[in-house]
Image (cartoon, rainbow, N blue to C red; front, side):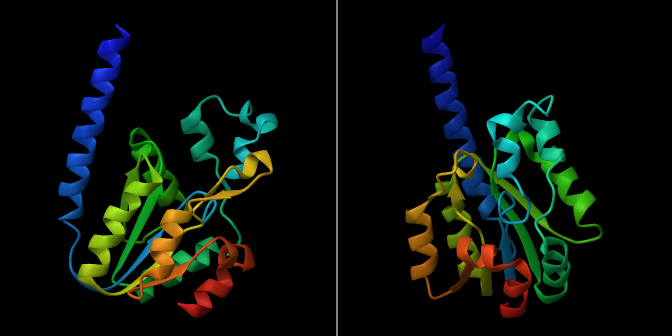
Length: 189
């Protein structure tokens, strides 16, 4: 039985990756795109993951729907909806949480046009980034690319950060910029 589960899981991952590659092809060419992460970038996620807080939620969907915005997130997204041709929320979350994530976005950022993409692993974000910089004259990415805050030992996805920082086609705002304030980022984009 475990063998079957393992094989099924591998098959699902292969299918998901195939669908991801197809999905990326349907992102439309435009003048400007902003790509926004959600967790610990727009949403104050990490406190909800702390051991003493995790039991406050009946399930993962309840936790996601309860996330508070980080100061300045609403204004940043509102401003971005006027300045950029396309907003893409790109988050490393279980794709099964697509609809609860969409509901969270809709309840926090009313009346904006956007695309939502969830990837099961952070490294899969690069597939989207590579496509977006090819089809957009201006690409801004705001993503903390960090994890493990809830254990008081913040770690970083260094490969992804290095990719973004080394790419001259991308204007990247990361963890330090987010900590300095989303309103400061808004003034720079």
